[in-house]
Length: 343
Ligand code: NAD
Ligand code: UDP
Ligand code: UDP
Picture 1 (cartoon, rainbow, N blue to C red):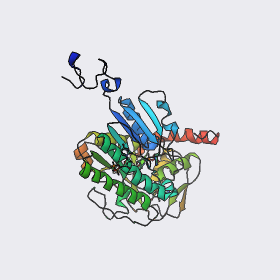
Picture 2: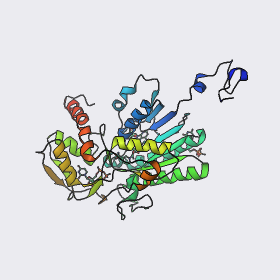
Picture 3: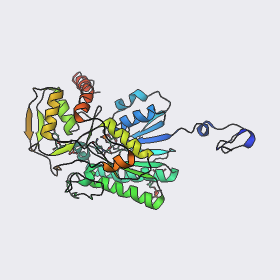
Picture 4: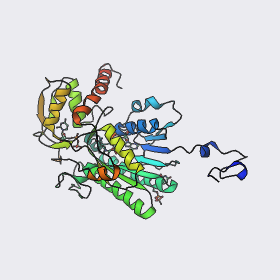
């Protein structure tokens, strides 16, 4: 007899001879915290496209309804305005936990709130996962490696992080979130997955979040100089958002806990990035040097051999292909802003 019973058997959940709708349709139900944000909203698009039921939890600190408005009216989509620092009761199969401000400008705005989100928010989502037996994926960050003394960074590297600096609320917050995930895994058998995400860009990034790609692209469109901090020789590796979303889903669906680096190994100095932005948007754009921020990592590049081998995943979109894909979205939003619509 199947789970739903056959004919007369009176299987589980049979009420008055009829199987309740909730039990008949065993579609995957998935929570995405931070689902109204940049990465979260692209993940939601993919999950809805695949036919999953998706519940977004977001407090709209950095996320926007506009990022998910195209799903309003779809019965498989739900949006809950909720702060993950507070407990919540839900019944789902999987939890993608993304809620957390991600850009330095946003996470430094209220550092204590950033720590609460990372620690209490992650604790609540792990408590939820434990109670309902859901699989839990944490979006951690390459920042757990701090200003790395190993290059490129492998998952085995423990990092070089300042515990009392301006970035610590984020770096140490994410490190604690990883610790919590592993402790719930070992102590309470929660199925956890940990992704360490490297710099990611694409449509729907916040326009003024201060990150280098959004800054340069917006500056080039607005005909302002591109602001390079420090000498511009520091490096980052930039991943297009659809590659990341594919990696997150592969990790969630796979059998390995991680942590896994998810990033594009193509490494660029900020001056090189400025050149790519000029080539893509406006070859006459100029560069303006500004002082760098405290604790800025000098270089960062993921070693992704582990994800390649165990998740069969690697990024497909190089910077020169990905950058043009975000320009229209930025142009439209900048235009709307100028017209006072502020989308
Ligand atoms: P984002 O700021 O666009 O999205 C974060 C979302 O979380 C927003 O919608 C925001 O409103 C929501 N949020 C923040 N605090 C919350 C709270 N207390 N309760 C409920 N919702 C809350 O950032 P993103 O770039 O989409 O990042 C998503 C996740 O990926 C974050 O956890 C971030 O740390 C991680 N990450 C991103 C990058 C990147 O380059 N984008 C790199 C490393 C890690
Ligand atoms: N939690 C939640 N939703 C749930 C179950 C738990 O938000 O469905 C929260 C709960 O309020 C607690 C946290 O998750 O603050 C950790 O829960 P757990 O059961 O692991 O720990 P305890 O409640 O025993 O401290
Ligand atoms: N950066 C820059 N100009 C900007 C914004 C950032 O040169 O307008 C530099 C910044 O100093 C850092 C790099 O770009 O070295 C990446 O910064 P971002 O905030 O995007 O990401 P993170 O430091 O978190 O990797």
